[in-house]
Image (cartoon, rainbow, N blue to C red; front, side, top):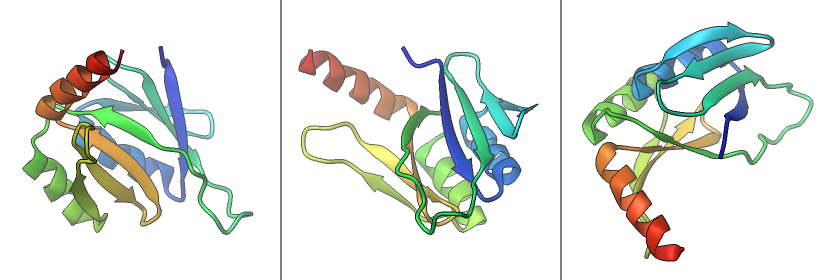
Length: 124
């Protein structure tokens, strides 16, 4: 069970605010960043990225939303974050957001979540 996921960003507050809108959850200040809190899931902590490395780290997270595909794409477009629907053979579909141009966050709508659960149960 995952209790918390942490990623970093150049502008953690802005990233937290945008993801909170997509995921329909609230944000709270946390030491070194912001935490997204939803009713049914792990906390997502967004901290400041230290620019000592030229490469973004390889963290990735899949998040559920009650928003529609169109709503997620609209928010991503407004922010200038590239987004695409992706479905690999035999896997559930996801929306991949490229936040701040270099960090992939996967977002699953209600339909995608049902498909994801079905695929995970079939794999067990």
